[in-house]
Image 1: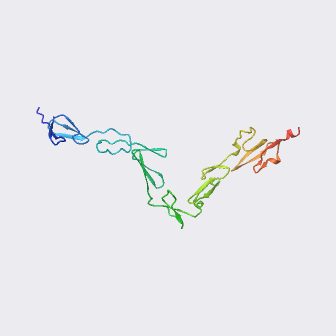
Image 2: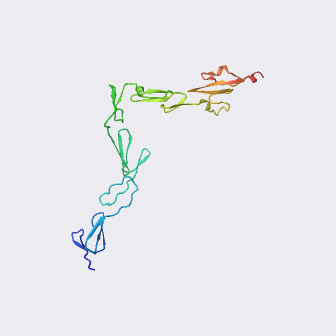
Length: 232
């Protein structure tokens, strides 16, 4: 059978005959070509390996296949190359092959403010009302106190409660222990028993015990003495 071969131009511009049935690598960038027995040259893009990443990098000049970029570590968290994230209001960041790039952008819409005095807090992109009691707009737990600041308000649980200020839970003082006194039950002392109250507690003498007059507090009798021992 007569083999025609395939004429191709090399880098110097000269014509070269490629033998029929042979494979031509990189005749065009990032492709492989095949010369058939009719003298026709067929080319197709080279195959690239599967990449296990959501945002492959676009091949650079001289590269044929995309690659996975390096992850970025930002504030203790890893982000994939090509991933966008917003670490705080109006700040937009992206991970680019191991490098984090951030920009500050104003939102299209900011909340409407019904106040005359307005300020833009540092690091924020929407103005807030100033010189007002911000507790008016803050919802706190019934067992919390609202503290108004210059730009916002914060809820803090009252004494005897714990939580984030939005939700406050009663502290059971009767379960608190003091390793210095093995007879102490919660915040009550010797010869007493503890009654837990919302946000507080009460100490009362055990049966057969009497309060020590000099040891009374707003939470009742802190310590009681044994009546039997007092008559012995």
